[in-house]
Each structure stands twice: as C-alpha cells, then as structure tokens.
Image (cartoon, rainbow, N blue to C red):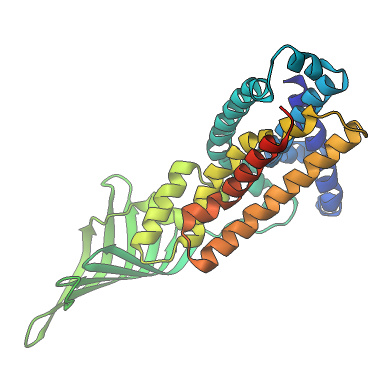
Length: 348
C-alpha cells in the first residue's frame, strides 16, 4: 500500500508541475496569489487522481512483485508449491477494493471538486464558465406532447417564448392544441411552472378556437433543476445527476449514444485497476534485467495503450453501431483477454 500511495504522490506531483508551467503565464497575468493557485490545484487533485489511480496500481504491483522476484522470494514460494495463481489472489482482491473505491470517488467526489475548479479557472485563468442561458430547446415530454422553449435563464429561473403542442396519439398524430406564452418562470413554493401572456389555440374539426389568458399554472414532467442541468457540464455531474440528465435528453428526442457511452465509460474505467493486475503480476514475477527502469517502462506502455484503446473503442463502437455499453467496455474486454493470455503463457 505504501508503494501505491508513493506512486500516486510522485505521478501527481509531476502532473501538477507540468500543468502549472503551462498555466503560469495566465496566473501571472491575472496577479493570482500563491494561496489561490494552491487552492486551484487542491480542487484539481481529485480529477488527477481519477486518471492516475490505475497507473499507480500497476506501478505498485510491478515494484512489489518485482522486488520479490529480484530477491528470489518468488522462486522460494514456487519451490514451496505456491503457484502464480495463488500469488495473484491477494493482489486481485486488493485491486477489486481499489476499483470499487475509485468508482465511488470518480462518480461522487470528483464532480463536486471539478465544479469548484472550473469556477476558479474562470476567475484565475480566464476560462469561460458554463453559460446560464439555454436557447432553442426541444423537449418531448411524453408520446403526445412536445414543448419548445426559445430561451431560459437557469439563474433567474425565468424564460421566454414557450410553446406546448398536444397531439391526439403517437401512431396517428393530429394536432389538438397549441399554447403560446411570451414569458414563463419556476415557482419554487408551488413547485410548478407559471406561464404568462398566454394564447391557446384549440384545433377542432372545422375551426380553430382561441383563448387569451394572463397567466396560468402548469405542471410539467421536469422541474427547474432538471431544465437547468442542460447547461451544466457533464464533468460536474455525479452519477445520479448524469443518469437523470441522459433520461431527460432521451425524452427530448435527442441522440444520446455518445453521452451514454461516456456514462458507461465512467463506470468502466475504475475496472482498469483489476485489468492491469493481469499484466503486472505475470510480468514482474519473472526475473528480468533492467530492474526499475524496465518496470516503469512496462507500466507506461500498458497504461498509455489502455487509455488509447479506451478512446478508440468508444469512437469505433459508436461508428459501427455496436451499442454504448460494448463501446465503453471494449478496451476492458480486449485487455482482459490479453491479460488472461499473458497469465497462461507465464511460467507458473
């Protein structure tokens, strides 16, 4: 465990130093103090750890098992009838625990820290913060109702130009009514939407009947926070907020395959802690020349290959239409099979 923590610390420090040099000019241009810079990187650390934990797991495995191999302790264990599989059991159990912990950390802690980090980036680095305005929104509330919104301000909870279209059925749609409202707002006490300056058109068989109303209370299937989430960056959403966001997007008739792939990818990535063990233990259990340099090189090659195949798998998976789940898990499946092959080929 000490090796794992040291690996994370060393990699994290390198990551922060590189990023600091890239952004140093921006910090200086805005006269950002040392304490504010330190605070910015404090909230950046969770996102860095999310990426580095599997690499730290692999490095810790290579160093620990490699040290046992270099001191001939693995040879002694094998002489005592201890197989490679038995040697891997405690390491695999630990990697599964790390995967579960990282899943919680990545989906609950990282988004909250990222939100603060993005706010500080807008303040100290001049990066654009996410807009509070939504424009030209289309929502399919249910099978027979469409809602179109011209503009909505998530901060003031007010909007303009809302149109509600009600149809007779999904299979044979006939327009029954349209409701136009020049303004609308969210009533936080009544937990409903208030539409103002309303014109309602009812489409009868032979004529169109119109009604004018000052304001009226409406209950939609979405509330203010769900509508506001449309301007919230995905990286700032926890796993439950992201799921609700995707459901809302899907109900709005939007193609969510890419977002759904990202969603499953967030869940799949922590499993890398288990996958890298399948490479790390067999590789380090065989005594090799080069020592630490070979182990670090192997860790970097496997880690970068995994990250590259993760992105390639998602892109290719979507383009060939194999589905978001398989696209997100393609790298894990491939590296798992290769890992089993490596174990099979390693002397037991």
